[in-house]
Image 1 (cartoon, rainbow, N blue to C red):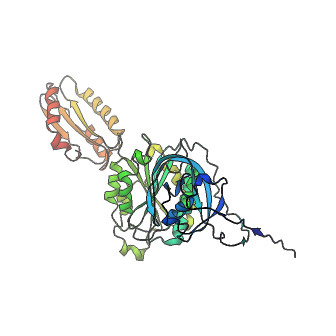
Image 2 (cartoon, helix red, strand yellow):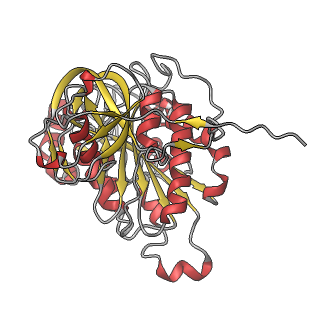
Length: 443
């Protein structure tokens, strides 16, 4: 039997100083050797995770956590320039914010860097996804915040499976400048923003960022992470795009440690569509530890199955990538956030005078019912009320009398015809002076 033996010799890392910048490196993927003590130098570092090329390579490596105070080898990959490099403090190094730079770099720590030779390994198989277009998927121009579980519940092994799942989702979404933008937050004791919506607008960069996510541990404070994301993540200064639908996909392993209802309601009030993806539901013997067994129903605006998604195990997520991606990009289905169609209060002022006649009055009611059907009437959505007027005015039903669309439309169709004189001004005045009484819950 014949064997083929291959030997792979590593090149010696190039020594650099603590002040060598990313822009000073001429090759991509070069391995450099940082001296000890760079965390004590006043090095200039701009960005978090991905650094502007004007940054110190070694200072950024310490900030990233791929090097310690003693220095050592690190691999540097060059990337395109970007906007909004983030400021943060980590591992004794304070990085600065930078609005824009023409080139960037990222570090990669290789386990084999410290040895003189390594055995050749079979390259990792890349996910079986179509190559993303440079401009992205124009049919899915969403701003998507992914809130992932990084708690003790999930553990390191399932956390890595979750990262693989998120990477496949991101690849299927096909991010790009004119396609979807994706940001990511980790839920733990306290939420941690890993990257914003406009930090990675090319698939390769996004895959790097997801691969480099570190497991946190702690409680599953998913509600706190939803609240954190809703408050400012989609702001324009954080990369949110004006006029683009806002989507928050929340991954929960098992069950959350805190309350989701109020946080999810704030998100919807802020114009964000909340999708809750539950993986590995609690077993029967675990239900006693679940704080709120209806957490999935309370986290989404309506229990119709569209905004909640269940996956039985982290070991069977691949087949769920495409259907979940289709939901996230389904523009027509995104009526969970506050929009014109589901956040408006509509008061119908109906002429019931004798000049209208009963037959025409019924036509008017049919016409109004058609208008009402276009809106998402529910306990957390749009509301309708009706006042009929002649010389007198009569409140037929108020904004908060019906929280179900069919009930509200049926009530509209059942309004009895009054007949009488016409006093439109008095009816308008009634509506205005009764505003606090009938609309106090929405003001």
